[in-house]
Length: 498
Ligand SMILES: NC(=O)c1ccc[n+]([C@@H]2O[C@H](COP(=O)([O-])OP(=O)(O)OC[C@H]3O[C@@H](n4cnc5c(N)ncnc54)[C@H](OP(=O)(O)O)[C@@H]3O)[C@@H](O)[C@H]2O)c1
Image 1 (cartoon, rainbow, N blue to C red):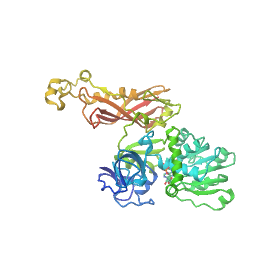
Image 2: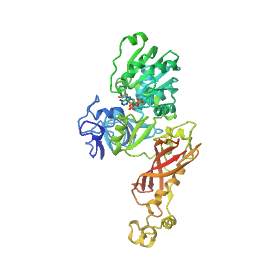
Image 3: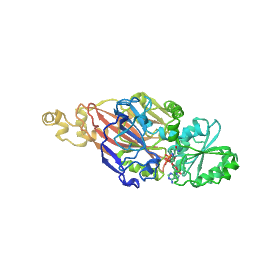
Image 4: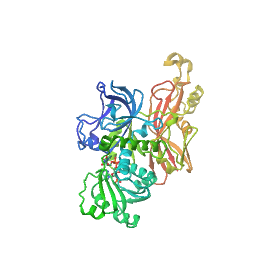
């Protein structure tokens, strides 16, 4: 199987894509075909030997996965072969398969897709533990979230809003803050261009914030602490800045505040029942469409080092995800949302307004209906392109000389059908105009023959905002052929939306 492996400590550029094999299964272990692996901050540290866990070299990074169980050890009774599962594995997830202890594996409820499951445990688990168990957040309180556009920050914005708080999101750029606003943040502070303390005073009318949620540490921490309200709660989530702040003891004394350490991993281990209760609530919100982690971008396995370096470079908004194998979705688990800017109508995802697209990055749509390729279509395509090669048009010769005795559709005919097949799955309303204008990374994998049936599935991969206000949407598309294991065509289609 393929895996990204770390053979020497250092930056993501040292990671390699390699062929490795899984060991024999042990009695307490589960083997999983990994579909998605969420990228988390520890991935940036573990490859540099700076993380608390230090797996022996060589190892694969990737601590949060979702996939399908392929084998279970003799003593395993919490899941079975074929189950859709999610797991926090520490490392080893950026690989086609993983073998892990069964007690770290959880069966995913039917209504949650593998992609959403692969990124829900770490950030939602941490943020909800911090706000719920540590801060005991009450409706109406004010929460300041630092590093608010990152994984645990964006999770905290959404959860604090669901719990009835007023949320002040603080981040390093306008672009990141606009994203935080789209998640529900009420007030925004750009800490690279504004004074944190002054802005908090203005926003809270000198009262200060009730709860500070800090995944960054460094110099911002003391600044933020000086802005805490009487009896406030300061939640230490992490030190993404790389600097552990030194806090003068007089500040918490004068503020009468609590400074609390949040260590979700230890909480999950020491208080499994409380953690389980948290997850029951998180899953309930996810199924109801009230909570969903925003996906910054899906990266193929070979680009996992880029995903880790994008995280180090502070480029990620929400979560980066490594897509190892896309999930074929049953209709019932396609989209979980009840928001007014989105509808699933007769199996079609309809998005209202280009601003709403961002909330759907990472969502999979389809598969659509089967569509038959006829000889007439192939002949018409040959006439249009003047490509009259016998393999396409000469049915008698094909019957004699080609495998399966059938003519082949032009690869570009299959490709040209993507726009049409997409109209079945996806529609944008309340936009001035949109059109499909190009393909990236196109691969023709299996030949399509006359009378083959094909269908399309797609994933809303990423967006790029253009300076003229338009948006480029990148859709990862797969055309499969009925009864054929490998797809006909895989590519990223680019749509421009005004
Ligand atoms: N305590 C726990 O149980 C627990 C659980 C999960 C995560 N964590 C910790 O929480 C922290 C954040 O994790 P995450 O997954 O949210 O990471 P993330 O997605 O990379 O977000 C971190 C944010 O921190 C800000 N930042 C400021 N200085 C930075 C720097 N030098 N390098 C990188 N980011 C910097 C960035 O926002 P701006 O560019 O806007 O400043 C970035 O969006 C990590 O330290 C992680 O270990 C702790």
